[in-house]
Length: 457
Image 1 (cartoon, helix red, strand yellow):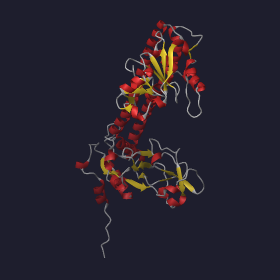
Image 2 (cartoon, one colour):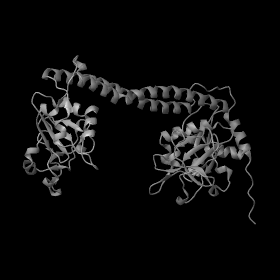
Image 3 (tube, one colour):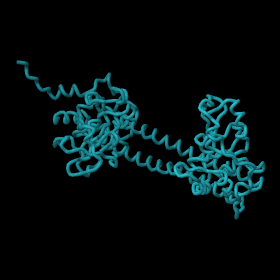
C-alpha cells in the first residue's frame, strides 16, 4: 500500500509560504515579509450553469448571480442575472460574503484580474464560474484588495493569464504562487486608511474637474446665444429674418440616380454627405470620392469658399462652412449648398444654423415619416439674425477668443483628470513599498502574523 502523506510542519509550511530573496520584486521594510498569495488567501471558484438557466427576473426559486460584467471599480449590482438555487447546491462557500474580493478570472485580456470589493451583503447572492472570491484569514481583506487593484492597473495579470480564442484566464494555482508584500496587521490598517484618505481628496478634485470638462458644451451654448442675440457686441436683436434674405443660392445635392457605385474611386474629389460633417468641420472619407471627369459632370454641385454645406437628412443642424481647402469638393446626395451673399460670413452663419434654436426649428419643420428630410422651402424660411459686415467680424472675433479660452479650460481639466488616475496608481505603488510614512519599525515582524495564519489554516 502507498505510504500515507505526512502533514507538513509549521516550519515546512512557512518555508513554502515565504518568497526567496532572489524572487522578491522589490525591497520592503524589515518587519514586512514577501509571501505566496496562496498561503494567506483562499480562492473560491463560482458556480457553473447552462446559458439557458439565466433569468432576468427574481422569483422564489432563483438567486442573484454575479458575473464579470458586475466586476467594476465598484461592484455593479444594477445589472444582475438570476439562476435557480439548485445550481449552487446549498454550498455556503458559493454565497457572497462581506469583505470578499471578487475577481474577474475569465475575460478579455485587458480586463482579466479586475477586482471589486464587497462592502456589504444586503441579500443572498452567488457568483458564476468566470469570477472568483478571494478570502483572507487574519489579514485585512481591503489591504489585499488594493494590492490586487494595483497589480491590475499595472497590467501584471495579463502576463500571468492564458489565452484561448476570445478569453483570457487566470487560475487559482497561478494566483496561489503570486508574490505579496505582507506587513504587520496594524500597518495594513494604517496603509488602508492613508490610501482612502488620499483617494477621497483625489476623488473630490476629480469631481470638480469633471464638472469643468462636462460643462464646456453648456458654456459654449451660452456664448453662442449671446453672440446670436447681439449681446456680445452690445446690440439687441429684436427681429429675425428668413435665411433667404441672406443667400444667393440654396441647392439640394444630386439625386441618387446621378451617382452609381462605379462612379466612386479612392482618393478622388470628396463628396460631402451628412456623415462627413462633424462638429462644424468636414471630415471626408477617401473611398467616398469621385473622378475629375465625374466632378465636372456635377459641376453645378461644386462647393465654393464661404458656402455652407448643410445635412438635410437625419441629425438636424449638421453643417460646416467651406474654406478654400474644400472648394470644388462636391455636395453629396444627402446635403445641400447654402451660398451666402458676399457680405455674410459663412463661419458665423454656420454656427447659427447649428445652434439649438435652429435645430429645434428644423426638427419641427422637417418632413418624412421614417427619415426626416429638409427641403429648400424649409431652409429658406429658417429665422436668423442679420448683422452688418463690421458686426459679423467683431462677433466672430469674440466667439473665437471666448471659445479658445473655454477649450483651454476644458483641456486643462481633462489633463488634470488623467493625472489624478496616475496619482492614484503612484500612491498605491508607494503604499506597497512601505513609503507612505506609516510603518513603525518597532512593531513585531509580519512573520509572526504569517505563522498565526498558517497555524489556523
